[in-house]
Every structure is written in structure tokens, then in C-alpha cells.
Image (cartoon, rainbow over all chains, first blue to last red):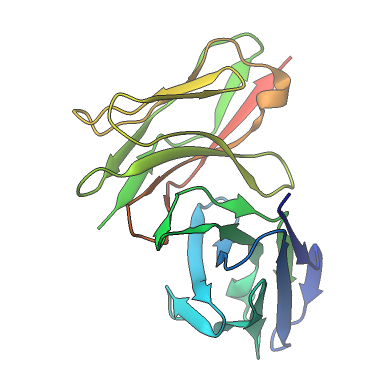
Length: 116
Length: 112
């Protein structure tokens, strides 16, 4: 069966420090991968998605970046965190089926980032 | 573009009450529609889905019917339990689109 892991689960960082959140998927190949952010009291915002190694699409301009160094690994990074980067970050994957997304996303447990 | 509008919360209910969360959407063509649930401190998980007009998705006592004429996908449960306390998200996806569009989420609290 497929599983998705993301870490760390909780992170407290000072403003201006770097960030690295990691996500890995097991039990499937060639998944679509996603990073979402959920700010307090707000909905889900898609930050990045990837349909293959080295292929990253950014949905919103910001000081975050994403990378996909391996097929089932997705990393969210920042060189200098801002207070507004605080939130709950969710990694997700979906199966690649004939070039279309079946619609169902499978989410990790989330990483709570607090920037002070 | 695609968009999803959910009723704003928070919603507070007593156990065994009837729950309805309204969801309407804007999209071209025939999107697939979803309800996701997020329990406290956890990620999201799929609750139910419908892929064409008049389909009814159901799971764990929850139901939602894809209504193309009203562009709606309202979530209902006849008798809620304390364990149903969570945030509920409506979402849609277009064929050949890699991304889901989510509503803002509705927080539901069920009191014993």
C-alpha cells in the first residue's frame, strides 16, 4: 500500500532563518506531488506541484521554493523565513493516470511551522 | 477559472443533530467534486466524491449529490457524533488538470 511521510511535524524558527520540509511517498511510482499551505483560520493554498523529477510549477509568488530530486521525494525550502510563512504545510500525492489527475489527493500528516 | 464556495463556519451542533454544509462551484465543463475532512492536528483525507451529474457520494453516514443545475455539492449527515468534529473542505477537479481547487473549509464542532 502507498504511504506518505513528511517531516518535521513541528518547527519553530526565527525570522530570517532557512527552512527545509521534506516529503516522501512509498509504494507508488511517478506520482504527482503537491505542497499546500493552510494558514490559521483560512483554507488551503496550493504552493507548488510537480509531475516529474525536476519539474516544479509554482502557483503563487513567494520566498519559498520546491525541489524534486527523486521521483518520490518533494522538498519545500526557504532561504530566509518571514513571519507570514507561519502555517500548516501539507504534502500530498496523486496517482498519474494516462496524463490526467484522477482527482483524489492523499495527504501527509502536515508540518506546523511557527516563525517568531 | 475554477472556484469553490462553502458556507462559513464555525458550525456547532449537538450530538444526533442534522448537519448540512453548503458548497457551490464555478467551473467549465464537468468537474469531479469532492469532500475532504481534516480531524484536529491531522492532514486531510477524502470523505466522498462524485464524478458526474446526479452521482451521489457517500461514506461514514455522510452524503452529497452532484447537482449540475444548481452547481452544488452539499454535504449532509442525518445524525452527527462527537467524533465528526473536524474541518470539512469541498473541492473540485477538472479532467486533465493536475490541481484540486479547495473551498475555505468549514469547522464543525459536535457537543455531547
